[in-house]
Image (cartoon, rainbow, N blue to C red; front, side, top):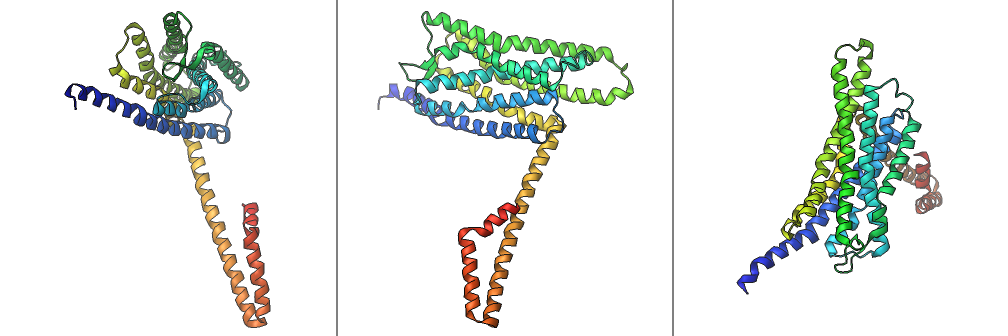
Length: 365
């Protein structure tokens, strides 16, 4: 064995193991967690939340975006495991487009939620017409439309690279200029621009709350408390989003200015996983900070447990009915002869064979 090549070979093998085994497993774990959490949020908003509030409509839209964002992870995991894209050019374009749309939709949703908090706290009376459910639904539709327009470069140029077979964006010449322009464009439109609007909204909210002081009427204390809880929840969601996505955009900018060597590939994997993990964090935040979602989680859990108890009770009744019928057969045999027993036994066997008892139980359930 050549000692001069042992070190680089071991390092390359270790990096290959991380890229091909560990990273796909992490992607799958994040995907499952995000799908379960956001599905639960969507279910609770649609079934257990009492009122169709503007905030809940925006939360539902964000959960849908996070849910769809998670769907791209299995494809990314397969590409990392195989070190190439096996799904063809069309699927590459579809997956990258859906991934990009939901990435931008998430930050636009948070921006809209922050503006909504500003209107609710700073201009509660004048904004009452705008803060209505039908307006919120129209805003959500606009957010999706704007996101699609923003990611049109991805729709046009996403394809499978010829040299390494990975799904990426194939820029026309001059490729470096296109790539640099796109990075600056996405960082501005998809992160730093919306973040500036968000920070401005909460700065104005803080100024308003401080100036209000104790001048508010006692009768409005309950409403103020509710608005503060909602505002605090949105602030935490935004803060977690920034913590999860800031490293990704910073690394892209640094890589644009200084081409990072291959040793930083592990850092790239980390920031990508961190950005996807943000979609797992929002359901946890709702569960801790929103009273409505706490009640919804409890109701959903209690309903699930109650359903299991009912199914167990039905199964027990079914067994008791079967035992009773057999007992009747035995009594009939002792009292009226074997012919009656044979008839009842055959009837019971027929019921069990064709699932008549099961059908009856399902109808009752």
